[in-house]
Length: 413
Ligand code: ADP
Ligand code: MG
Picture 1: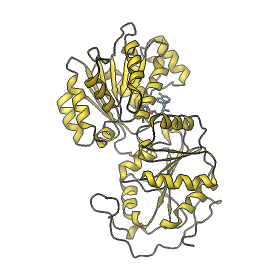
Picture 2: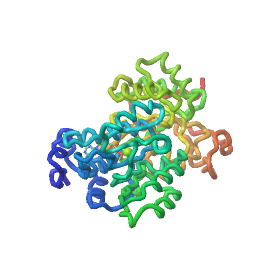
Picture 3: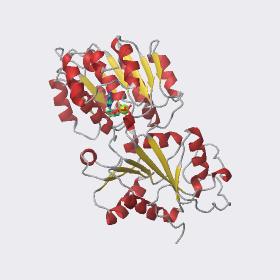
Picture 4: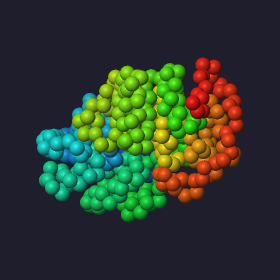
């Protein structure tokens, strides 16, 4: 279906055409009429499916620009996501006179206050900062909010925002519609849904297909001490336009960044401990393609649109299948092709085995292919160091990898 077939304000249609949006994505097609007709909604769709515009377009349509009041409230888990949301809504609604604005922690409340006093139709907020405003200021009046959106609801729960969301939802006492978006639906969401959603329309896309399809999943089996070299060789031989390289801890990310800086130009490092201004500027430089390789902790994995990224590299193996999906979902979006590369050591063979099975991944192995059949599937949750028993079977000797220019990495030096 084309946007031009929808009954939208001409300014919005014009904006969408300028953005190059012609056809609705499947999630946009399914959510448009329930949102416009004021229904509550529970939508589950994979990352990169276009959830921001799925919300942003009907919201921009419904907002009355002549009413100077917050008419839509959108909760997101991170500041970067808030900025990205505002940017997308701004592109969609600017010509129609819709003013979006984001509030988030780590940034002067005074400046945010001034803007709020002026004119905001659509407020995007991280839960903590919004509660700060609601408790301590009189700047935010939510009495005209017609639509509440909870984006990346599953991520917010994981980050411990459930009580904050509960509080915010409970403070919207007048008639309004509530839209829940998430890539996965953990059980804890059910309680919020039961308490606050009225006969929601449930939309579920690609339940089976967890990992985005346009993504090729590469893996390289290496010993832990050879991993850095394996990564460097990989970065040197691959045609990378931009890569996100994930580490599991800040300390580890820092070490890796230092190592990579010795060999490559244009490295960035983004993590939760950075000051807001620094984070925003690194993020912006990356988006403008002035940074080629971005080392990141999981912070950057949450919902951000890095759709231009050609490679997502798991230098540290992610904790859990969901985290793998979230990280690798940063590339291969909207039918663009992307490559996920994951470094695997002996410790992770069991989890890799479950990952491949759960996500029906057809892996492309670089170098030696480990013996996954002999790997134990881990029991329970992985808790950092303690894991499952080390295997004793040696890995079988290398099979040839499909790509000719591949330089095999020596397993030990
Ligand atoms: P999600 O929130 O589901 O992870 P996003 O809303 O970030 O996904 O969208 C992913 C990418 O798809 C963005 O780059 C966005 O600009 C693009 N996009 C969204 N809708 C459309 C559309 N209808 N046509 C073309 N591109 C789109
Ligand atoms: Mg999103």
